[in-house]
Image 1 (cartoon, rainbow, N blue to C red):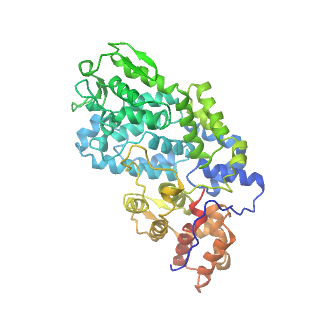
Image 2 (cartoon, one colour; image 1 turned 180 degrees about the horizontal axis):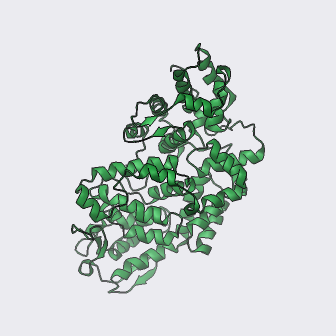
Image 3 (cartoon, rainbow, N blue to C red; image 1 turned 90 degrees about the vertical axis):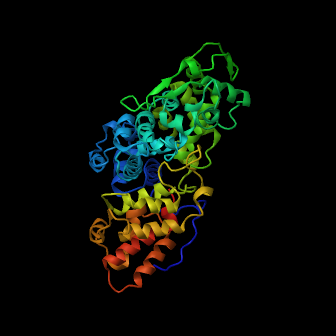
Length: 475
């Protein structure tokens, strides 16, 4: 497939022929899901803007049995840390591979798309590098019992769950934080990333005192049913007085020292703004007006950090009209791009193991970001890695990744069996809702016109080319 591609320019306005109501709904579906597809867009039309948001804010009422069937073979997902250790040993390669596969399958095929988007956001917010020692085992439990269990719950409870997580303890070395030698890694990231933000108003003295407050917070390392459970060791705790953000913690506070710190941080204005800013950036755009962020931060305070309420407050039609994502779209991160192609092209997936190499070349294997800040959500981080995306689309549709198959005949039926002269526009309707610039559609059609017959090979290559066009990279 040799054809020149235009560069991606997310600042360029998207040329849309749809009425404004459809334009608004399409923007909502883009941001709520890992890829617009006709079925999801029709659901949004049926329910209306606010009805569609409410539908996705109650994920437990959405039938996800089709996804559940795909996850059945991933036997490690529901095991306790002790069971994982007994079954797979300390290296935990199988749990690592299965959790990666589950992340891709959930992103692409879950009907609970908004929930999965929030899970991905907070997986980065509370990042745990999967290959950090015992995290190959413990991240499975962290994903299930910390991130997924609290993604649409209350942020203070999510924060506490993360603080008690064995995976977080290993990753940021808090298991080694004792009165005999304070370890400040977790304390620093707790304030800089998890709560207040880098400019949240804390000092180096606060870092030291927070580290002291979390001395003795560890987990059970004994093989058996309790392995990985949170454990507080009184003898390893610094029992002296501490002051955190101007609040005095009296001596001999024990376990309550860390618990009080978490409550102080969870109730802080900077935390409300930091979490609100993350949600607004994730769902609305790279540059969200401060007034919108403040509005969502106020909901944090009024609701006690209820993330469901904050997401509801973020996904308001007036916010979309203010931000205009159809004029200032975001660039899909690699996992988002892969999931959107799986969704739009109707790829049948039995396994995503071999697809991981394509994700690696694009730069985003689930849970494989080693710094504590999580995979970035910025144009600068991903805008220069477009060639691997083209290769990924071509390889996926060509069946290079065994376990993933594309049926050209079934795809042709899904797009209405168009004549060859209309193939590019029919593909664009399926992949983007017919919103790609006419120049990109023409480029794909020009490639199609070079062939005499409409064959399965041509359909496959044309879809791959359309998926590598700049517009499909955006949302």
